[in-house]
Amino acid sequence: MRSVVNSESVGKRLMAAYEAMNDHFGNLSWWPGETAFEIALGAILTQNTNWKNVTRAIENIRNAGILQSELLYKADKDYVAELIRPAGFFNVKTTRLRAFLEYLHGNYGGDMDEMSKEETWKLRKSLLSVKGIGEETADSILLYGCRKKVFVVDAYTRRIFTRHNIIDNKWTYHDIQRLCMDNLPSDSEIYNQYHALIVETGKQYCRKKQQCTGCPLARGENNELL
View 1 (cartoon, helix red, strand yellow):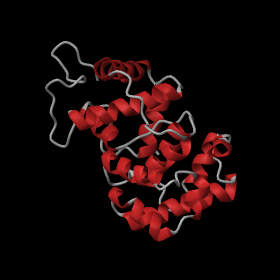
View 2: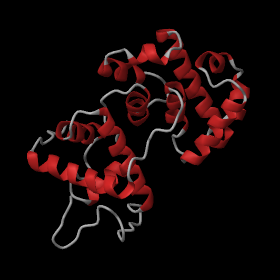
View 3: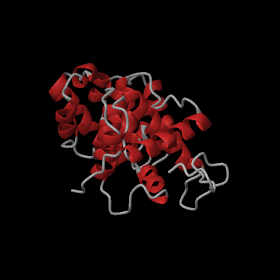
View 4: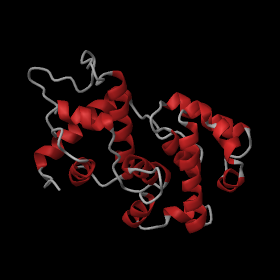
């Protein structure tokens, strides 16, 4: 495990980046979802696809009248697979949804509020034991669904921080998460907005072929943000 630096300079750089992106994009109100359960479904369905496709899949579930843990848990597997087809890899994702639903019902009676009462890192460990739930998905459920103080790391986070010399490509998910959590205010709302800002910056500017013009993190001659 990498020894993560906790320093005033790193904290200032991370907050400077946050403020620049926040000024540029404003409040992004992420993660979209009317309930904690809907947010958890979105976190699972968004693996390897874009949010537009996830929205279509969730709307199908909503229109079918089964956007509740108990109803989705009882629904026929093939029927659910057809509903979530827009999200891609629908057979795999149906299996993952089923695994999560079995976990939720087996441990918390299907109640996301009950699940949210669990101690953060104990809950994270148990979520990671659910087939198909990796670190990013588990942390998205924890932060956005359960309002836990957990920083979500994704490919955009790694790309942006690497390009701005915060990290290198050898850093693990855990390394990057600890860097952020050790050097940012311990606040779920800041973690929420920060991740949303990173995603938006990544989608619009910090692509595989970077588009620096207009980027809130663009480095001028005398004003290096990161």
